[in-house]
Length: 540
Image (cartoon, rainbow, N blue to C red; front, side, top):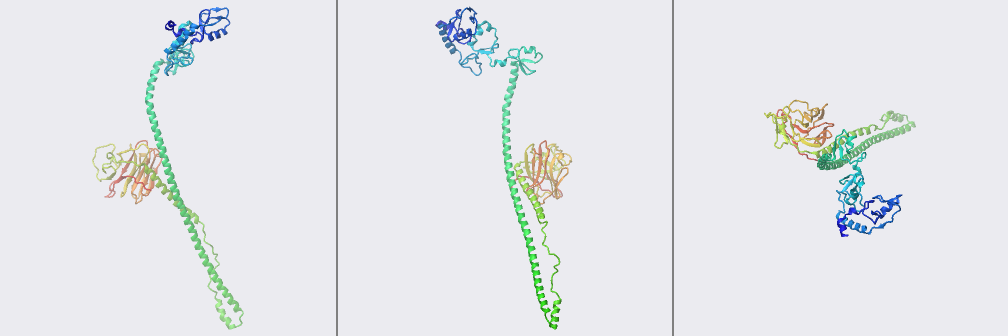
């Protein structure tokens, strides 16, 4: 028994029918061994009884006896094989398709059987003549997917022309003129691409996380804007309701006062009529009494006063009450005008408060300043010095008009800044594209890449086609400039009065925008005050 364990291997103790270890091995008269159930089922399906291995024919169905020695040896070999072979299959290994229960690691795959075998179940392919002709390859999983459905050959090549897997026979037929490469070559190309993708994916993930954060920030900002808009709307409606309530009180008072005056007038008329009635009644009594007298002298003496009637008003004209027609219409017209003014005032104030949230810190760029301008050290003030300095040529510098740009530019989003214009008689404020002409005399309009508000005399002008004119408030001290780059909006505000001076919508920018200031030239000693970029002081 010990010698058998040393010299024999598990390959000698498998049934050639089920290819598995013997289960109750029995021997046929010709000396071959099979599992009892395997040989029994084999003969049940046969008309003649013969050996499955040597094909020896038996005239009668042989009796089967358990091969006790083989059974014991098979049990021992089975135990030793299980100890030697790894009982589990790693994720990177191919399992044996023939194993029942615990699957062992496959050592070969058969391209004819389309099955992967462990060392034990591979034994018939190494011993049986018919199985030796099968093509064995290194273990592969999903063998059915690796075979060419047309030629039953292993897919070993890749057609780059049609981007499909092919076998060797395919290259001699349908893919004869195509560019075909081994799988390894295509694998290496795709692996290099995969490495690039692998390197790009974390960055793409990070970019999308950043975008998610930006979207969440925009949503949060939108919520704040919505809350602020609702609050402003409620405040405006509250103020308008107060205006309506005041109008109602004023209207009621007007009608009531008119009614009181009418009632007083009619009361006076009635009293006057009653007095005349009383006088006429007394006269009637005197006439009646006189008509009965027989004294000629008394009659003639009393009749003379009766000839002159008492003073009375001419009541032939119909007395009519005053008309209320048009009172409500005139009052409603006045209310409409008041509400419009109040709504604009409130909306402008709410709008200014909202855009002030986008304040930016900007400073003037001396490299762009007209040679006659003087800038403060902090870059927040500019005024005309009255003398044009000789400076080196700089493509960024304005040389025809007294203007200056800020160091900062904006290519997206919203921004707002305020400029003090107190004590100025002429000035220009706004924004301009980076590509503006700084050397020649051009019309300052949106068509020429300028969006500015210009003050001179007693009015302000937004240069466009046509120009927009606005009256200049004598008390104007500070102008606010707001830009929504993405929506194409430029607005100007009177900060103290909290009103919108004018707005341009539907603007197209397409390149960086720079805030622009022009203090104007000194005019006989006037207009020497500076333009000052001021911090925003939000007030309700």
